[in-house]
Image (spheres, one colour):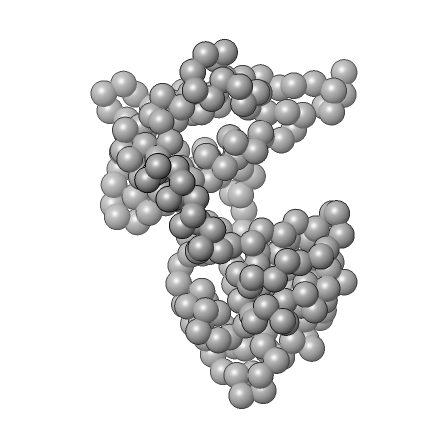
Length: 231
């Protein structure tokens, strides 16, 4: 039986609110639901680690992620025994294990496009560094911004994209640009070989099937919150 033919255990119990989701791992990939929840747990745990917390309970994780504590325990037990009853989960150990499960234990280089207000806020924060992403290049077409330093990174002209992608082994392009400019930058990234685009613009990007685009919109996130938590 080949890896593509088998469903790897463990799978969640057949009862409970998420029982219809299916197996935790299909082939060699996590199910979308499990991957999404683990990412949310990791976000909270990373912040807890920065705050100096050594342990965290499933109830605390539930309060911050709005995932049922029973589901949280089921998710973790599906990959091993991480916590102790009455003590909770060790934050450092759980962060390490989730990163292994999500295959994000290494260092990943990213490039940011747009040195405006949003781009500067992204470059100056720890939002990506906390999760193993290293901002190695910032691009802009505005000659007044080129050569300036944002955070600790010098702004380059977008014409340097292809050479920098190859030189720095960039795996993710982050778009913090006006909507009208987003598609052209996405095209340039695809041509340079980048397979993952994180899009803060409102543009609907057209890319080949082997390229993944994740569009982040505060308005959409707010609608999600309003639907699930206020209705």
